[in-house]
Length: 178
Image (cartoon, rainbow, N blue to C red):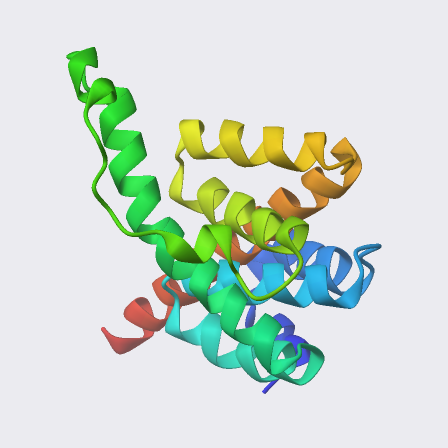
């Protein structure tokens, strides 16, 4: 199971996705921990069993146990936060924004890895989950930490391609079962 297996599973009509998958993961300028943490967190966020099954072993092989756990934590906590903060933002009653969230998210303050890496993974998951408030928040933290726009864009390119591959392969699996 690997990136190559995943690329070979992408149908011909989605050739751009296959090429982009090889490019954003195979030719990334991100350091290994940032790259593979982003890959793992977005594979989880994509909710695609095929994508997760193919990318997780390679991510695990390229991450320390702490980074592996932190990337999964980023996907988990952002699954909750993205729904909560996106809903709060979309409601026309802005009083919800004044209420205490009351949700545990301790891992954000102590992720067990470099804070920048965790923020990058959280940002990428937020891109998949479509939470503008979370995207803005994580982007600001990353920029204040000195992360350049190109690095941040690299993370959301990975998110975009991983999500698109998941959608495509999951659709193909459903269509093949008919």
